[in-house]
Image (spheres, rainbow, N blue to C red):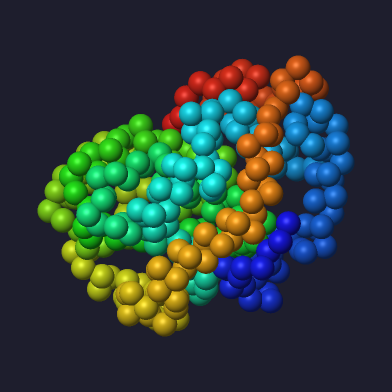
Length: 294
């Protein structure tokens, strides 16, 4: 697998700082990975320690095998994902914040075609980025900037509670990521109505992390100029340039995405059932049951 496109900028001490925060060292991390590999060799149901990590690995592969309505047609080379890439920006900013958070920017790429954007395909596009991050990124949490300039009510109406629950659960339970904050900028009046509805199904701790601004001024208050793209008064590459880097990165990982299309859990070979949250989310022995918001 070639990795010629540099998308994430990490300092030399980033890994040591993160593992130290979890009372680990780089040496103990290497030992954990060694133990994982031994455990994986015994899991004949999976394609190809720490109990929590075993749960996450089992969850990841089972989800990919059972929830085909989400993971189907997910490959960056699928026509629906290519179409979303033409309509929508969803890019990581290369530099971490001082607290080692990764920032993402999402915005319409073609405003006159915003009605054609399908949220679930955008979610798939975002999940593809997570696949790359599993290999290349190191951080504590994520921050999302949603620039909704040019959006319309017909598009926002597609962001249903069910979609929100799916997105949050995929993000937290499958990829084990945490959201530090959400910034919704260039808002329109009816966004406040939608947020009021969101408060009925989102937990208070999530609501507190959502910040709304009618323009982009809030960004300079919370992020340094070296992190922000040129589009928002920063010195980093523009969102369009970062978008093109992402597309190149997907091609660097094309072999991995082609492999993911074929990976499936063989339940007949599962040695033992992991009694954990997988049952709640995926059902007994990996049968998909429900998605819930954490």
